[in-house]
Amino acid sequence: MPDEPREPVMRATYRALCAHGYANLTMQDIADETDLSKAALHYHYDTKRDLLTTFLDALASWYEGRLDDLAGDTAAERLRALFDECLSCEDSDYPAFHTAMLEVKAQAPYEERYRTRLATVDEVLTARIRTIVAEGVDDGTFRDVDPTATAELLVDVLAGAHTRNVAVGRNLAGTRARLDDYVEDQLLAHDADDGPEHDAAGDGEHDADADVDSDQEHGGSADRDGTSVDRPAEASR
Amino acid sequence: MPDEPREPVMRATYRALCAHGYANLTMQDIADETDLSKAALHYHYDTKRDLLTTFLDALASWYEGRLDDLAGDTAAERLRALFDECLSCEDSDYPAFHTAMLEVKAQAPYEERYRTRLATVDEVLTARIRTIVAEGVDDGTFRDVDPTATAELLVDVLAGAHTRNVAVGRNLAGTRARLDDYVEDQLLAHDADDGPEHDAAGDGEHDADADVDSDQEHGGSADRDGTSVDRPAEASR
Image (cartoon, rainbow over the protein chains, first blue to last red):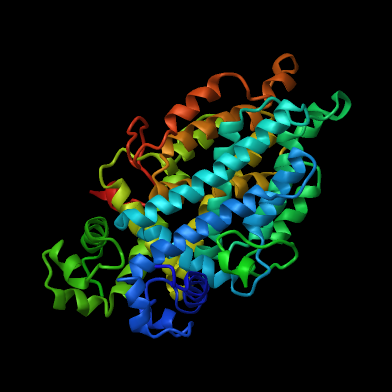
């Protein structure tokens, strides 16, 4: 299908997901965001699930590109850039799109094609963190932590932050701040004179964290740069 | 409504959620799991959302009771018992119920009553962890970490583990094992002679973690005791 207007359709799908969520999304909603008729859209995609599968493919590719291109001279800087990618929420579409994505995740057990694409995104993220942590361990800037276990823990944190943000309105900025503390306290190899004592995190910095997290509505913080993950359309608009 | 058969209806709702998921669940499905007619069920609950709201209330109460009653003489033991509660998956209904709960979480932005109940569960869990960590800090068995920041990070981990389990099939046992390592490496106050070095987690234990986590289907591990959270019906069957 060389004439398939894939890129505009992907952007239209993104906008329609933001506007309608996943459960209520129709092919007409997506067509309404393009110059195409619903019939023309159906020529390329039999069902909403077919179209969403292609959308998740595009999302995975886009996401992989973003994570390949993280700024930072050190492992700690690249890890922080990755957290910025994953947890920023400056876009006004952010809450709506992440709500739709949580709906898609909840549909994954019923739709194997969603599941495989979401698994790809999960694996790409996990592998990227594992690589960065291994680089930090190898060059001595990180302690001798296990890169695999660290990556899995951090991906759990990132996934949980998004779920809690959508479901109960916990803001992402709180998690973002805690991950800075995690890098500082658990990963960075400090000199002996500030080493072990620094591990104990009761240093006052964390007190601010309670304020950051105090039941703000989701998407309420726009104090971080970068584009959130799961937003392929943003990069190509 | 003193004659409302609430407890059997809650158990029926649990079973119907496991069998049908949330999106496709009908009042008839729930009535079919009880001795009541659909009309009788509607006498007590106008809509599926009304019934689900009551179900989430029951869930929150049940959950609070479970977390109030954790076994363990020390803070570390109580924290591990809490992790067992939150991440066990021995029940064969487990994957289906957690899939339904993720659907409910994804509906929370559209249904304020779900959101407030889910927020209660989130707050109960966070507060319980915060209290346990504070107890450990106070009695000197834990390092001087910030209980609030630690609790929020751990709740992110627990929520993320469940989301990834449903969406991409990562098993919960991997997260459970990593949390044991977290307690050991980050929370427990070790004696000076095994202190700082113990922080570095490249100790071989973590290598097993990669195996535990190797893309098993969700619910595949039943090697932990305890009853998973979000399963009120189990406790009262």
